[in-house]
Length: 459
Image (cartoon, rainbow, N blue to C red):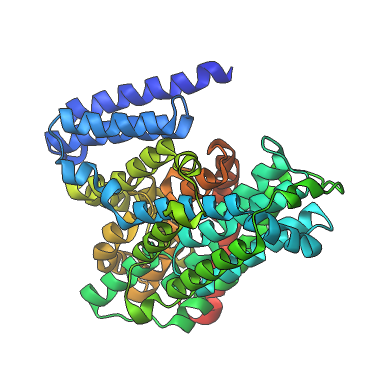
């Protein structure tokens, strides 16, 4: 049945894309309608996995360029973004940690505390990921630190590649290093974009503590607990009591591991203090990668480097990063948001319905713009939403956070794809958790958030 379901979705999407390109709905220009059709097909290919993600991304690039619908600098913006180079740095750092045996040693140390049971392991990794959100501004950086540790733990605890337990660890780290940090103002790109635009357009400034108090109890703590539960449900496992002592003998010298650990700690300090020195985390990661790649230092021999860089993952991510840029540059983002605004049942006085509508428009917009593009599209419309809902401008802007942190498909969040690539795991298992988490967020967590906001007097 599944063999027919995926092609059927893609075929229906192709028909919808063709209709959109010919009918030019909602006042779209011909170029916008054609771009919208290409976006729909690309999303269906990513969502169904009918073809590998890198093939879908290459279709996206090719269709836009052959159709003259966008320029190369926009189409290939994913390759030139700082996020892409942070991904490359993450691959290199992960390879160095694995190749040197440092990951196995750290995993062996962490095993003492986390090996009592699989739930304790998953819960412990979530707590570590949440803690990193307070000291590291980059989701990709957090994943680059946590994935080698998690995979080393999986190895020493008998969770081999292809087992649900190992996949569960990768999924937990991918989501855990990203999701809770939406509730920490400087720790995710959409947060920063939204706060910057709010300051630029409306003169509004959000305090770190106020932002944390508003969002972290639900989006940080409760949502993280739900993520742990979903991972345990979808990827059940039991830890092995067998420990492979042969692996310890294969580890590189302790001196080299100590040097590598020192380099990584220096990188972590630089990442954690980026607001002081102003250096982009990607360039810090790139500098670290450069040091680790020098063959004479022995951290990553050339053959190990070739294995570390996953070109397919890079193409997939480049497409996901570029999609939001293309949608916004073409003007489609504004059209989609305004059309959704017309359909939303908002009226002053109906606070709960207005709250849920703002949440849904953020979540829905991110399907087309990807997560970083949501605040760029919705923030300029905040005054219109405030008038329609009767909410304060600050409440409307803060509701964006609930919306763009509600993920439907993994491709919407670049760090998800990066983390799974670093772990050497497929993307598809991640979608089990994102779909379930999206439903739980809309049905349970968002209403709880509404009550919390009421208690705080935000609405």
